[in-house]
Image (cartoon, rainbow, N blue to C red):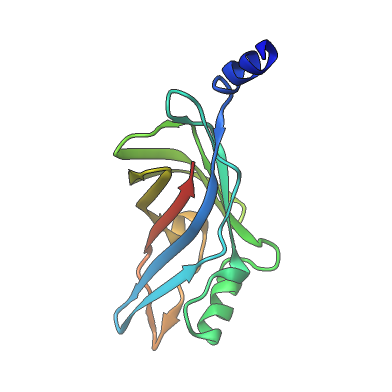
Amino acid sequence: MKKFIIVLFFSFLLPLSAEFLKKEVHFIVKHPFKTVHGKCKEVNIQEIEIDNNLTIKPFRITIPYLKMDTGNQNRDSHMLEVLGYPTYKEILVEINPVKIQENTTFEGWITIKGIRKPIKSIASIEKQNNLYIVKGKANIVLNEFQIERPSLLGLAVEDLVEVNYEFIYKH
């Protein structure tokens, strides 16, 4: 019994991990004639560890190019081309440690086409029982990653891509 109590006591000192129930990234690209809404529902997130102070330890997110979908095969094929596929196969996001709050600023690095840049994103984190619902957005500037802006009828898409994400994890 004494051994059980000691194990139970130390288990509370160990980091808590989370299981993801939803991992979606949506992106919006604007063109003078059309706004394109794309998505990736197969985002890969490294297991997240949360310590007793509600601080999330550093973690990584990868967004596979082949899982990004705009609803148009020709557009998706061109998107792969401008993103450097098959040389580059994913977007990598590395998140620094962060304290969980209602409004949290995630900071870290994003790598697209082999180019690594700092990134900052504001997210809301809502706790419902043992679920955390994380919703946020970030902006990506295409020319910072040497991405050719696709064009249609001689007009290119805007340089700014809005990225929205929603993650639900069970803690």
